[in-house]
Image (cartoon, helix red, strand yellow):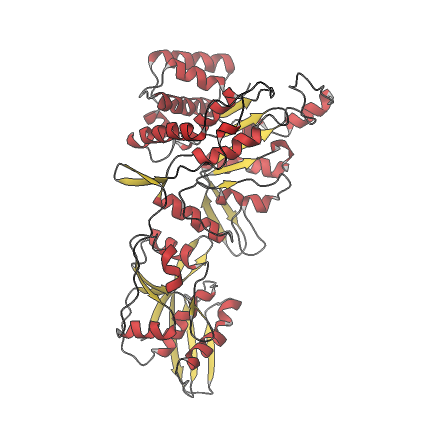
Length: 501
């Protein structure tokens, strides 16, 4: 055996690593070259112990292991198994072909799962670089969710050597079924689950806000709620997650890849992520960063789900203004001296704020204690370019003791699923809230009355090009909820009613 394939993460993407070893005359030594991190340099002791424990005798030669390409920084204990195998099988005539090898070795030769194996294999599969992989048996259950890869599951170094020699059949596992229901549309399967631990049945009154939440969920539109303290802004935001549209397998895998890279436990349930950073969060923690190695932040972890900013104006000004790019371009590029990381940010942005610093400006019961200057400064923390990227604005009603619940999450979710079905059957790649300019022209046709009304709105309200696009996207979702193929006047009127004045 001359070499084996493994891989390492370079930002969010995996890069193949060619692991090769040579035995040369000289003082007995064991070295690893090729820009290996501390975890890889420490693997010398793990590999040495595992080989000796399993009957391998080190020859009195100099052993050099090279990790190629040599100019790529490599990290992770998952390369242990590949290093051990190229040493143990050095004199064997075995051609591993395109087999990738992953696994951390214990001192007795047992193989352990690591958090990096799943994101690495998912990235390799997305790049069409991997068709078969040898992994710890403990990794098989979650790895079986990644389609199109043949896995060789082994428990220890001895089994791995036997599998390479063809002396022992590898362990196999059936693909893990995803929990919940499925929806097949245009040769693709989507997954969703009817589970409502936080139910809209708990929200009393606020009919306009609940209607806005339904529209926002059906099209993944950005939404801002403004109202007095205790009127239900946070309640609505936390219940939105459970009525969001179904997810494709790729979205489920991508969400778990980002979760693992963010040092969080993955969940393979078809439930879109919900991220709610505190208003004191720093810019690097929200958008990603780091002094040397760029790391992902909250906006990446929210990809495909909800990013919720409570107390919206109290976030740092630099954080608020930096939101413009991910909201408009659905991507963020983090650049550092040693690395550059670009990741998708197709999240639904939901924000909540009080109408003034004391919160009582809209109250009919409590007097507002703020001066005009304080209110002006509070409002000016949010710039017009940022607010122009939010499609739905809702002014919440003050809570009333006579308010009663009106709709439950199950009913709302059913409407969202039907609207999702209409969007996918039209051939859309993205939901209405994330359509590009050309897609808006294709998928958002207006009838004659709606065209006339939109023209009047542009002239009367001075709508920008982005504002017109936002109105059309929201109206498209309202039409989908109504079962209409064309955007009509009533749909456009409701969409205009949700614009910030």
